[in-house]
Length: 291
Image 1 (cartoon, rainbow, N blue to C red):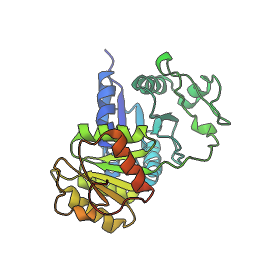
Image 2 (image 1 turned 90 degrees about the vertical axis):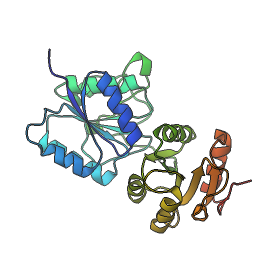
Image 3 (image 1 turned 180 degrees about the vertical axis):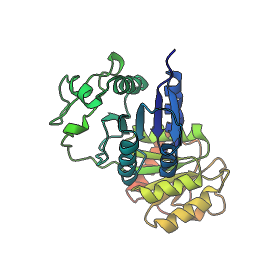
Image 4 (image 1 turned 30 degrees about the vertical axis):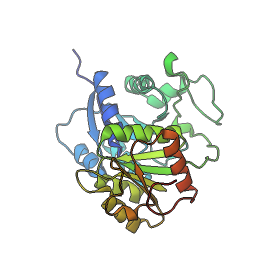
């Protein structure tokens, strides 16, 4: 029996990292999940590490890190293709071998991983799979599977000329409850926002300082630090950012005055999204549940 193929997945988004790791593991891959630049560089320097067959680079990794990490990976593991997973308009100068949009099905990801690992020359494999274009020019695209027939991989050797992007506000969600965090992120993503997630204060502060975050939504009761204290620090770092404090309790906790809005959990998605839209448009200010 041949050994399992090894895939490195690099992501700043913990819920996505957990989901992708589980998906790939169930498909029979050996997965190495790495988060920070330091973790990646330490792993690359390990003696006796297994042969790496593919690297997945998540959209949550900042552009400067993408570029430097891809340079290091190409230098140390030149035979391993790098697949970038992206959301919407997300150009990059990093040297990657393929791109796959996150909106596609889990099967699309697995099919793409299998293709890139099974073909010695991944770029050539993509070129040989051309079936047409989807509005970009020039573009290399191919159909991933019947279940995900809208999936496309862009060949980086013929990078498409992107259309001007539609502005998608970036929202950062912080909550140490991964289930609640994933649900909140899904609601916001379906409403057209770009969403970053963090399960602790340190990760949240890192994402805030390395991304163009316009609004932060934080749970109040968390294990490492209260949401009110976290939001106060975020306002100090980035005074113009809008912040929302969430709590399961009906009364605003101490420190809620640092938030632009305090919300009690349990709002319907439409009401929740209306508050978010209002904040981003500058309608709501001051702590307290909006009318």
